[in-house]
Structure formats: structure tokens, C-alpha cells
Length: 114
Image 1 (cartoon, rainbow, N blue to C red):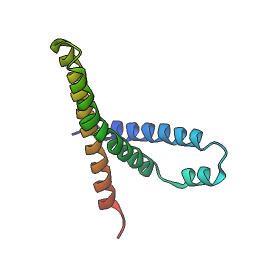
Image 2 (cartoon, helix red, strand yellow):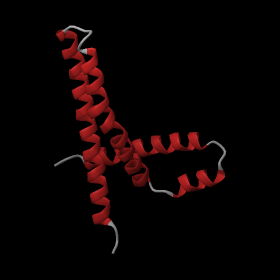
Image 3 (tube, one colour):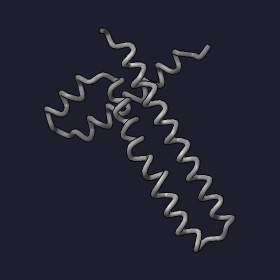
């Protein structure tokens, strides 16, 4: 059985860190500060997971493979294998972030009061 205390603590830590980052980026905009203060931790976490997925997917699945294809004409195959390993690791992380975003979105839909 998974340790749900660790999951909830990690989720709370990450959402508080993201909330602080949003507060810092809001500057002195009072309307934005009030909006950030009223949204839930889960909403902030979902928002940033979806942002990372939407930005990361085209970057890691389209732009980086094209860039590495061009670099393949310059570098040796050994170096290209290292670059491809890191590109594939980035693709894996994007898939994990997408899975977390889907999980949080589906779970929150189930737990909403009807």
C-alpha cells in the first residue's frame, strides 16, 4: 500500500512552491494576487502540469528530434547516442507529467460533489 502521507506532502510542497512563484510573478497586480489566493492547491498543480505537457510535448517530440537530426551531420554517432539518450529521457518525463496531469484531472472530476 503506498504511503499517501508522502504523496500528499509532496503535492502540498509542490503546489505551495508553484503558488509562491505565481505570487512573485504577479508583482503588485492586486486582481491577480486575489485570484491566486482564492484558487486551490490542486488547481495550481493541475495548471502547471498541463502547461508543462503542452509546452514540453512539441519541444521534446518534434523540435529536439529535428535538432538532433541536424546535429547528426556534425557529431560522431557515439556523441549522438548520448544526446538521444537525454532526448528520450526528456520524452519520458513529458509522458510522466502528462500522466500526472490526466490522473489529477480525472480524480478531481470523480471527487467533485454532484
